[in-house]
Image (cartoon, rainbow, N blue to C red; front, top):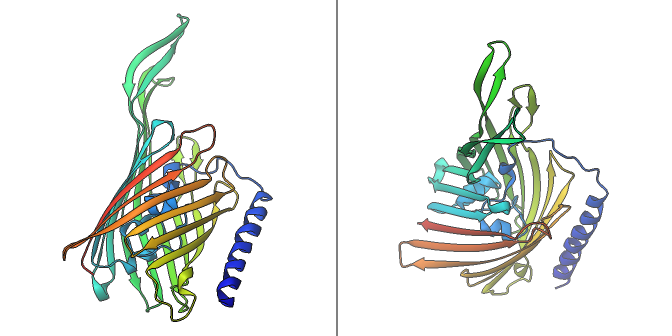
Length: 338
């Protein structure tokens, strides 16, 4: 019990001191493009304050820490829908298969739906704009994953993804040719993600590290930008495992992440998940050092379908302050085999 109280005190002190130090960090703005790559995929992660580095065992680990894919049991497939801010929708799909000694193989896809926009251009001889009809934009990233357990305690994993952003076409006057022509506004790039997970051997205490969105620079005409590279280090543990020789039907997982993004100062994520009988889950968390994001919460349920597999359903709520509506996520997953 003394070790239990001591560990709780250390973790609480880490969260408090970390959040205070983050407030003193210099702020970096507008230093990355393709911002959709930063959005959390999956209601479980989002409900726990966006803690990602130490997750393990589902297909959506491809979007968080790819090393977690090494702990997938059998075949796992997941789908997520997010009602993002400003009536924007964000979607994610992933599947992973553990092939035993060969490792775990996976595929993943994430994309945005911005709806339809009206295209207008100024008219020189009129006090107004000409309506050129509607247009759409698109953003997506598709990839393949691989992860492997190096030992019972250590695993590595990675993604190779292709990302594309298409902001439609625009009509410009070509001074060389002397006429108007349509110019496309699209850019693409290849992305590498890498992660590791380490179980210490003390109960289920684990550490995770990931580097996401590593790529070359991208160019829009004469403008060059980077993708949202992010370094993430996290720790997680079921606190109810600390007392020795105690049978538990419940889990109380505490997770803390430290993130170093390219386009902002350092951030701290903290989350808690309570699970009962590995069936019902309640989650909450907080994101520190964000302009709008902060409090999160969520629910989850796992349901065994006889000898076929397990169906999972998760919901997450994320507060976005006074200027935006709250963000809601729904995730459905299905696991076959062990």
